Amino acid sequence: MSGISILAFVMISILSYGYYVVASVESARDEWNFESVNLNVDLSRVLKKVNERFLSVAIDASLVAEEKFMYLLTSPKLRTLAKALTPAFLRFGGTRQDFMTFNPTFLHSNENHKNSVFDADDICERLELPPLLEKRLKQEWTLQEILLDKEDLQRKYRSVKFTEYAVDLLYSFTNCSGLDLIFGLNELLRTSGNSWDSSNARTLLQYCESKQYSMSWELGNEPNSYEKKAGIRVDGYQLGQDFVQLRKILQESKLYHNTGLYGPDISQPRDHRRDLLEGFLESGAEAIDACTWHHYYVNGRDTSLEDFLDPEVLNTLALKTHEVMETIELTSPGKKVWLGETSSAYGGGAKGLSDTFVAGFMWLDKLGLGAKLGLDVLIRQVLIGSGTYHLVDENLDPLPDYWLSVLYKRLVGPEVLSIEAFSILGKTKRVRVYLHCTNKKSTSYKSGAVTLFALNLSKGPARISVPVTISNSTGEAFVLQSEQPGEEGLYSKSVKLNGEVLKMVDERTLPSLQGTPLPAGEDLRLPGYSFAFYVLSKAQALACR
Figure 1 (cartoon, rainbow, N blue to C red):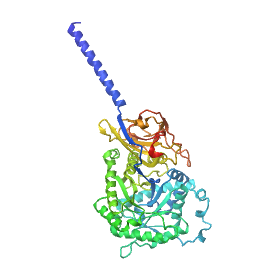
Figure 2: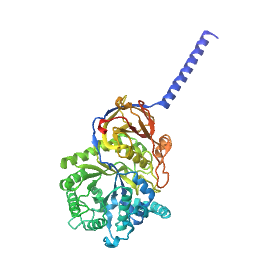
Figure 3: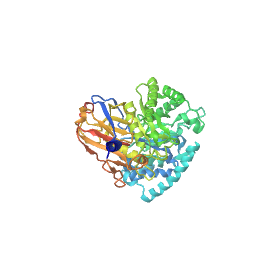
Figure 4: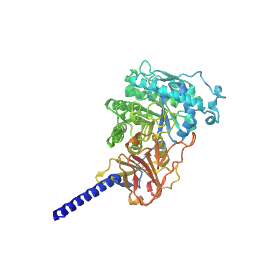
């Protein structure tokens, strides 16, 4: 072989080997590529403190459109699922509350109910839905949802009458589950002078007081849309006066004179809605215990998977919250602010998205960011009911957001701590982190423990470097991933906790939801398209002692 031939052979060999090495490195990089995240934390002080019922839930008033469906609330399975979310408010309301009137079958007194099943000491055991009837109601509810969706699309809502039995079923559900009921009254019952006609509400209040039903109240739902829904316009100042009227009625009651009253449940701010809120607070701020507004990120009819993973979309919550809080602070400084109704997408949710694994990114980020912004309570639309943004499906099986909510309840306390995440390129957008004191009431972790929860909006994994101040703390990791890997798994309705698919043990038993040990001194590993809770049990945070 000539010198030139040998040289050519060597060059080809080197190039081939070099290509192999580069290809191998690129392959390894694709497989092991991760975002490296550093944290700045302050464990010395509490940034904000939210209500212990910060994560609360709703049942949409559409359930009472046919009263028989209220019997689903006597399902032992549903009660088991609801109990795991306590402490929490249960809001009964929504669009159809303003088309509901209380129509008792006969006027009751305590004498009439001495032998009623609803007054029995063992009501929670006696009032249970038989399996065959539950199966039939669930099948019929599927057809009922089609009718409700049609009403929503056409914005034509029929009047609904409900009896004392619907009230009894609702109250027994909240009482047996340990939830605190907030009942939404109809604000569209108007007098000839366009003030609120309170006569029907008085009848309902009298009945509830005769039964000694302890609950809080709301009046109206999204008053900014009354003209579209019912052809009636109620301005902010009049709305505030209506609340003052309701507060006076409640103060006349022995049972409800100090009860909670929340409102006005306006949609997220735009120009005319902000005017409505200003007018309401001018006349009605003193009547309410917290100011409520509604927030959804996107329109459920034209959104996409990308929206659910977009940090810019998630950041819109901060913009809207600042607008609302600014308005409230000017008129009623110090007033508590609630998200009185919230989920991922308005219009009943986004089909194939709002009830799947990917919805958890919006939900967990809202819980973290909402608390950091100072929102006192977030009421999730819905526990059960029409739409696709529920926590529990039409078969009463828990969806991914339900399991996420239960873990949040168990592990996250009301004290918000300061935390910021940085990558090499600056503040990270795709990995979002939040830090709270660990829940002292429902866990056995030591005083001073903290819970860091994080979400990874990227396909690739992330490595989170914990500050030296807490890096030597042992703890537990609770990592939630879709049942299926990759982007396809984002559409899944099943979720894995530390590799195990979550499902109920039986109709009355949840799985144990165990964490995996977290070695001291190691970085936290957050897989792609996942979210996780990390309990650092020996953080000895001064703010959490």
